[in-house]
Length: 69
Image (cartoon, rainbow, N blue to C red):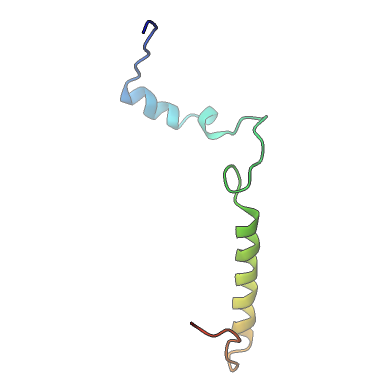
């Protein structure tokens, strides 16, 4: 195989990791839930759990409606 092989040293790669260009997403990147952005279903489930915990804290005398297996 013919071609040019580019070799980067550790110091250069570590400097690139902290550069602002490496920390910004490309402008034309599609929004893929669970890959680029958090999965929508995870956010909804998190919100439901938060609401459930708040309602349980508001009514400490009542038992939870779900049963453990």
